[in-house]
Length: 258
Length: 247
Image 1 (tube, rainbow over the protein chains, first blue to last red):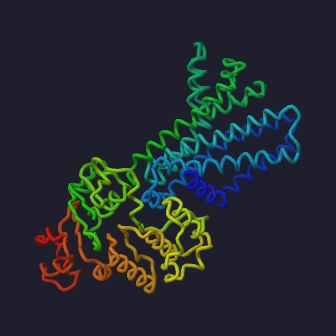
Image 2 (spheres, each protein chain N blue to C red):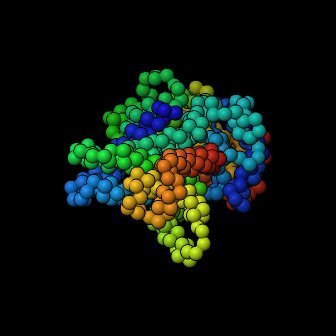
Image 3 (cartoon, helix red, strand yellow):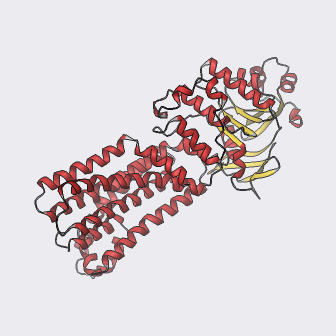
C-alpha cells in the first residue's frame, strides 16, 4: 500500500495545479504580512481565506482527480490488490500532497518574515486546521464522486456542498436566531456546528484568538460553551470529520461496480 | 480455463446479463462479440472483479473468483488486462508505471519485455505519460498487459489506435502467447482482426450467449465464408446454430 501511495503522491506532486495552489497561499500570506497591519489581523485574515479556499479546493481537486483517474483505477482494480488498500492510496495520494502544499504555501512567508511574537501556537493551530480541512473535503469529494458516475453532476454537487457549508450555513444559523430569538438556542446551535466541519475549524481558530474578532456567529457560541478544553474537543471532532467520510468513501469504493 | 455459469447482473432495473453460461478453453483465443449493449463489457468486468455479479459463478482454473465461495484477489496475478482506454497518471513516466505494476504484483524485476523493443517504445518510457500520443499510450497499455506472462489475457479492443505495424506486432505476440498455453479473451469491432486471432466466438445478445463455439463451426453452420457475414446473420436473429456445446 505504501508503495502505491508513493506513486500516487509522486504523480500529484508533479502537477501544475498543486504548485499553483501553494503559490496562491504563498502570495496571500506574503501580502497579508506586508500590508495586513498588526499580527493578530494577519492570522485572522489568513484564517478567513483558509476557511473559504481550502474546502473549495479540496472538493474540486478531489472530485476531478477521482473522475480523471477512473480508467486507471479500473486497471489497478484488475491487479492483485485489495480495494481498501487502493482507496487508501488514492485518498492519501491526493490529500497528503494537497495539505502539504497548503501548509508550505501559507507557512513559508512566516518563516521568511518571522513568526509574530506570541502567535506561534496560533499559527500552528491555523496550519493544522487547514491541513485537517483538506482531509475532510477531499474525503467528501471522493464520497460524492463515488456516488455519482456523471462527472458534471458530481462536480456540481461538490460545488453545491461548498456553497452550503462554507457560505450559506452561517447565514442560515443567523436567520434561525432572528426568527427564534426569544428561545434558548444554545443546544441546537451546538448541534448545528458539529454538523459543519468549516464551523468546527472556525471554532478552533476563534478559541485561539480569544473570541476577540468574530469569524461567525456560531463560532462565538461554541467558544462560550466549551471554554478552556473547547479547542481539544473541536480538534477531535474535526478529526472525526476526516475519518467518517473517508470510511464511508472506502465502503462505497469496496462495493462499487466499475 | 474460465468457466462462467448462470451469470446475471442488473444495473438498477436494467438487466445487462441474464444468465450467461460460457466456457473458455485453455490455450485458445475466444472473441466475445455482440451488438452494443449486449453485455460484453459487463461480462469482462465481472471476470476482472470490477463488477460484482448478482448471481452465478466464475471459475478460473477451477477456483471460484466470483460468486459464492470466491477467493480474494490473489488470482488476479494470473490475469493480464488491456483496457480499451489507455489512460494513465499524466505525471508518471512509462518506466515508473511499469515499476508500479511490478510492485503491485510483487513480480520479480525481470528484464524488459521484448514487446518494448518490438513496438519501439524504449525512447518514450522516460517521458511523462501525459505527453505521449494516444497510440504510444496504447503500446504502453499492451506492454502492461503482457509483462507478467499471464495465464489469462483479456484484451478490450486491443488494436484501437495502433498503427498497422504495431497492430501486427501485438497480434503476433498474442498468438505466440496462445502457443505457449495462455488463454485469451478478446473483444473487437474489427472482425477481420477477430478472424485472424480467434479460435472461438462467443456471441452475446441481450445479456445471453446466443452462440458459442469454434469460428469454423459458425461459418459452416451459417453457410458463410467470412465471419462478418456469419455475425451479421446472427445479429439479424437467424436461429442460432447448434454448436454451443462445442465450446
